[in-house]
Image (cartoon, rainbow, N blue to C red; front, side):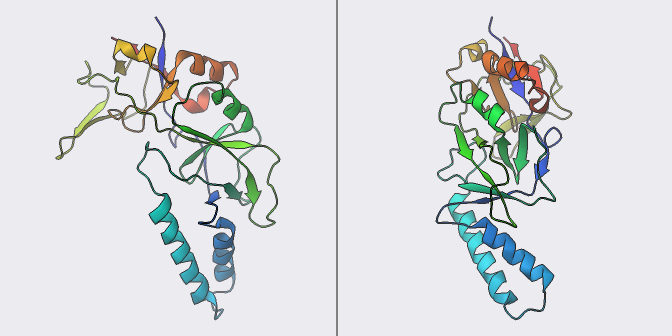
Length: 235
């Protein structure tokens, strides 16, 4: 029998950095951030109101254009990321969050490229230094945005180790209260034949599921810890 793994890619496992994103012809993060710095360094400058208004307008346009629900397909992705040297990932950090965006380093991203991600996005990107405008590293990073959704999780589950929530709208979800352990998430046996190697199940809050080959490749590369793998129980 093939195995299926859940992955807890949460804030308790990965570091979050104040890394901003630019979007071609829509939002220039570097200009936005330099305006913020200029305002903070000289709060009484007469042009501050102009800079503040520009930032508000640019940010509002970005939110209206780029915002999509979690685990839905993005119609626009960042074109570059921008970091400040006082708050940046360490060398070899293979998975981290940039203001909520999941970012993989080059080695980790190239593992994911070998598998079937369906319509999910694995987009190459470079990270630049806000202060200098130059490349922060020569390395190519990857933005991971999962939008493939499958419904294999059983409802009800045969135990109470996951918190069950029913909203007034009738929507039902499970939430892992203290993380997920092996065999705590029960899936339909058909999950072992999923047509993609990485997916989200809407029944489990913030969930990621992986095929056995993808999990094994990450494990072999010593990249398992930040994904928080737990073996699923197939029924």
